[in-house]
Image 1: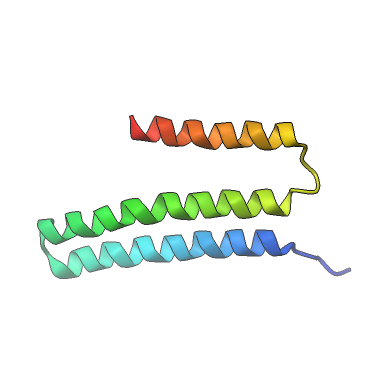
Image 2: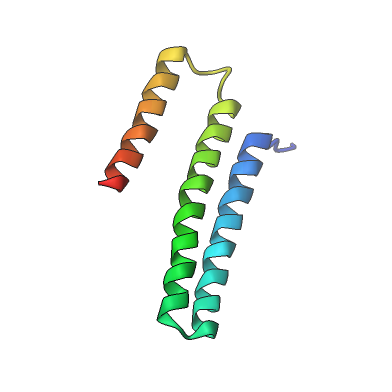
Length: 90
């Protein structure tokens, strides 16, 4: 029996692995540079990468499920993602 994996799932997993690799690499870079100022700059860059990966994963997942979801469910999911970003910002 063959297991089929949807392309959307593979891309979402790859994005999360990439995000984790970037985070770990940034941590080692902070240690190597041994400077609080440079660590803050690296952390600021990570603050841009995290939400970007999150949004891309959500979008790809929704594209992968587009044939199974109604428009109202898409709106509910979109509202949930928007509320997450509002909650993070404040």
